[in-house]
Amino acid sequence: MKLPLPIALLCTAFAAHAADPETVWAAALQAKGGRARLDSVRSLAIYMKPAPINLAGPPTTWLCVFPDRYFEYDGPGSGEYSYESKLGFAMAGNPRALVVNRSAGRVSMDANGTLRVSFPLSPKELDRLTVNQFVYLLESAWLHPHPVSLKGRNLMVEADGRRFQVTLDPANLPTRIVLFNQDGRRQKQVYGFHLARYHEFKGIQLPARVTWTGRMTEWTWDVDYEVDADFNPKFFERMPDLANGPEPWRQP
Image (cartoon, rainbow, N blue to C red; front, side, top):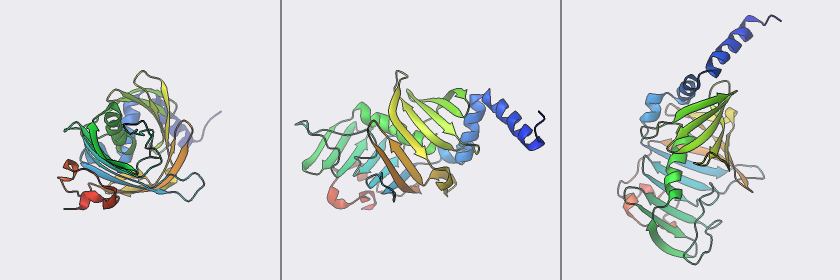
């Protein structure tokens, strides 16, 4: 059967891409805003509000300062990164303020009903630094993922010892990211992005609705962003305090 010319050209272009993961990855970076723009990002504030649906995620605020620091407010619900007190009580479901400073090797936390504490950095925080950069930007000046295989529109990518499966739409924007363990086994963590809700923030395409699926949970947020957000450089030297609200990094 002879295909109409536009469809034939599209099929030819896709076939060429299908054999070359590097080409598809380059197209994905270009769709996000271009490698130069992505690599220029130094900080990213992420404001996650419960979507007006039944499976809405709890309000969560992030400030990611690449490559080695982040702040999380009311983080339980934004992923499988729960913490336990010294007595073994899980922090999940409680209001929480968390400051992670990789350079100092320290995590500081204030959780509801628990005194503000500081403890050594663990693999969970190191992993989160990688996941945040990949999920929202795909690439940064400090994280340069390597595409390893392509099957249909599913691109397997390695980044900092992690594997991610990225599903791309025809415009080469991610619609789904699946996380894999370092041993190659698939995790029960999936990020879903609603294509119609991608918005441009200072030249970068970011998803304005995000669904996170874990082992037994699914949450959806409407998300706003601040690219290259201003913050007090001394903020990451402090202990967090829930009383300071979800954006304490702006305080002098």
